[in-house]
Length: 207
Image 1 (cartoon, rainbow, N blue to C red):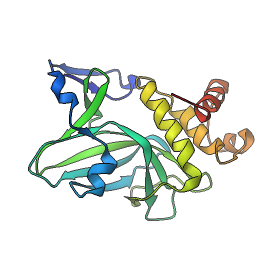
Image 2 (cartoon, rainbow, N blue to C red):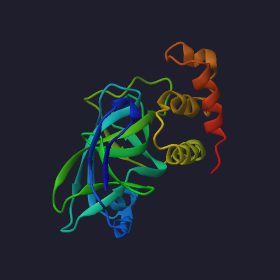
Image 3 (cartoon, rainbow, N blue to C red):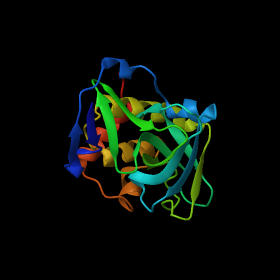
Image 4 (tube, rainbow, N blue to C red):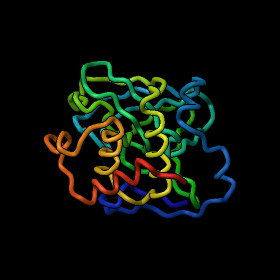
């Protein structure tokens, strides 16, 4: 079992263990365990627009350990309680950015009847709104139709490029999918030609 820190820019590796391949079984999607009540979520902004921008806590309401996939298939839409950005989360890590790996499986553990701090890798869905503040909380909601296709493509790209940090390009792809121009985005968001070109590839990404 390889226990990693998320994102190469952290430049930290933690303990390495052996893991039986059977642990690949039973890794579940966060949306599933939230919808069936096995897990409950509280989440707040931290002032950032993209990347590790939502802090929260997950509570395992069961007497069994729950393993949750780090990659959030099709993204998780997070509705803001205030006037700031709604967010689309594509990955979830423990609050210390730790996760477990076995082959191509990446997951976090929730201990029975315990609450754990987590951080979402998430992106601003609403270009015109402010970054979500620490005072603003989030609840999960169905992804609006206008965001479904791009959310799914971003998730596929992130899954296939797990070790790459392309936060800027992913955020650009989300805003470009809403028809925002390079000039509009450049007024408030820093990026370069590499990010812009990669964002176009993400917008059209196929497995």
